[in-house]
Image (cartoon, rainbow, N blue to C red; front, side, top):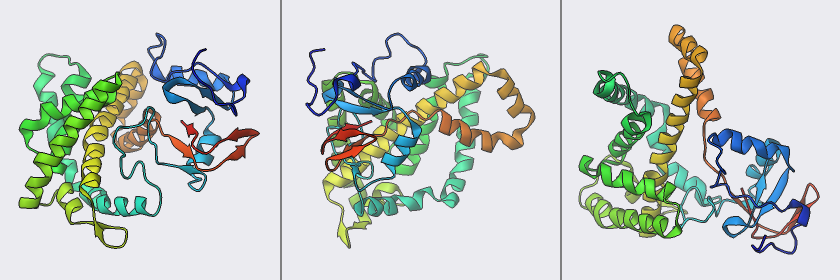
Length: 306
């Protein structure tokens, strides 16, 4: 291996591992499950070098310890734009959460339920007569973006372009493609969305962010507004679409589970919560705040852990 490994990393814990390359494995969960056969922690020099945690107990301990492990980096490789909320620690993290929380209360989500139901029926009606569909393209990508466009009060005609940019951000592969997509989406928010909301505020999330205050009373800077928009549009679209795809694939491959839900619809909500936990694919990253030892391993300030 020719990639650089820091001096404090023990040689026996170094692996040539790239989480973006499954080496021919088609099942991402099987790919990740294979890591359980190795050490609790290992270090890979890929993507600038980072640690990988393979045990739930250690993940839980790290994620709950915000004094030693910071959220300032949420992805590997790092996003070209810092993303507030995802990449912020207390106390400003709570300020950002409080600005968005009113849009995601049980009452507000309940108001969206009928809209989501009507949209789901409409999308299914669109391919029902064919007797088949390509789930992600015909449903998984369309349903969440239409709901998001409503929450953000964005023009319906902008949907295809935003969906394409989201795809390039998440699956562009090459850094230059991802960077260019981020820049285009940031430009869209800065030059089209924010000026429109300043001229004519509404009941949408962007209007609330423009009126909101953080850190004891200051308004959000344009950089924060754009970055929060990037988070809502770029990350929000793909995460939901991907999870829907994995849930649909699970049900397609497990007819007994599908039959159980069909015959006992009262269990759908509980099953859905469990499937959302099981099929969430978000990678969570932390940065070591200070030199420390954990389970006999020395971690240095600045080390990235996934």
